[in-house]
Length: 325
Ligand code: DGY
Image 1 (cartoon, rainbow, N blue to C red):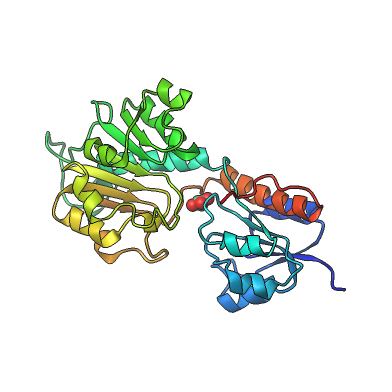
Image 2 (image 1 turned 90 degrees about the horizontal axis):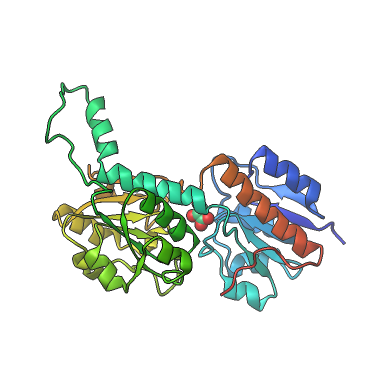
């Protein structure tokens, strides 16, 4: 009988790796490449015979991977809160537990959301790019004028969950008015922050900036398409730090090109890691390489949580954070 092992699809920080080696009740096998995810072949090969898989959001854990792993597989732990890369139903059919990392990345992701809102509303990246051209400049009353967040600007939060709420707290501190859809839009904290619970159509029609915070599911794919973009206010902004396919990017590029939208801040992309060529070329768009959770302490907390989830399941105990369908 071979020794049980856990397959980790990408090396994590030294701290997390040390913790994993100390706490996992199984041998830890790590995909060696540090530059990128394992190829499909390496993923299938590494998963073969594993009792647990610790995976990143870049790996597609589907029926084929679960089949390749074999019947001894007990847990798949995603190092991410979103788990649209995992076929949870297929895992459930095989009795494999799926876990994610909720909670620990809320603040980091909300920080980055505010960074994007500020970047596009106050044209920070555009102005930085301008200075770097070396062209002569002098302070001007109409240079790089953008939106004042604190002068009654309204932020619409689509999917007010944990990350949305952390974003709401920050936006409130900046003096923004808040609209929201989602399960916590009528919670005590939302009321305290002055959040008005509305439906998506109202939110789009009344917001100066719309920020997406909902999971990617069959129902939310292209939640923001041509019609929704047309409903948004002229001169408003779209921010996405959730999942790229929530937005139909070609329609977004149309809305920006026509001037209907004033800008967009995108940390995530419809066909990640590809970035839409039209969006990439636009001055009024800030594009980032999916770094919402990329704070050192946050990434450690995510890795540690994934390791703990696997350890608990392999020790015969319930995981800390199993995903619910
Ligand atoms: C997540 O956890 O889902 C994030 O997208 C990772 O940065």
